[in-house]
Length: 249
Image 1 (cartoon, rainbow, N blue to C red):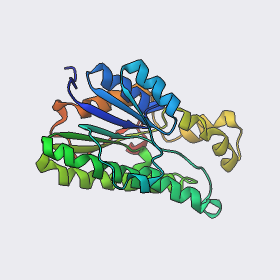
Image 2 (image 1 turned 90 degrees about the horizontal axis):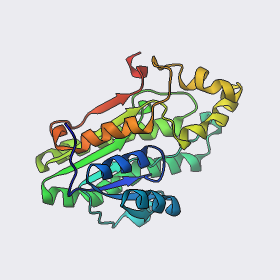
Image 3 (image 1 turned 135 degrees about the vertical axis):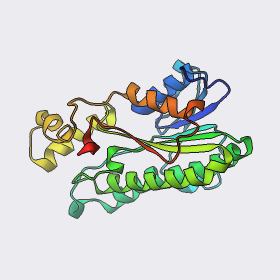
């Protein structure tokens, strides 16, 4: 069965590249009106132009500016994120705070802004792009792992509160996805692990995965699309792994 999102308005953060752009394309193809939200305004404009959507340039790390936001969205995809790779003893406290602000506090504020409209209409879908690191830990990623674990909890609370209003909330938990975010980690991973960059994929990124390849953004988008549709109406509070078997260990 195909997912029909005709008449639905989807807001996708980090929508200008990677998983976000793949979701934007898939949702638009299913008939949704898509808002591509991203810090990179010109990139958001390009993606929006390609899919017939709307661009929203926004700095989600500026959480004070989101406190009084009202957001019209039938579907909210919390996808925006960054990464820092460093031992705890060397981790910049400002970077730790930034990651939690962007990847936990901002999703909370967007939910706070979008849920009243969803409740009023009696229908809503919240899709949180978590990570296998929302379920498992890796060394040198204290802020990212903490943030993703926090997002998992926020998603479950949203599921419990939203159920009586027709709103579902779920997490998608991929392994390493072929995105600019992952590509930018390679040099840092090589540095902290003391190995050449050419060995990072095999010796760090894919070591726990039974399937030895990166996840493709379109694969993540296909699951997000299903979660956004009516067929997933009984799916809420769940965390869907797409990690090649990593979390089976």
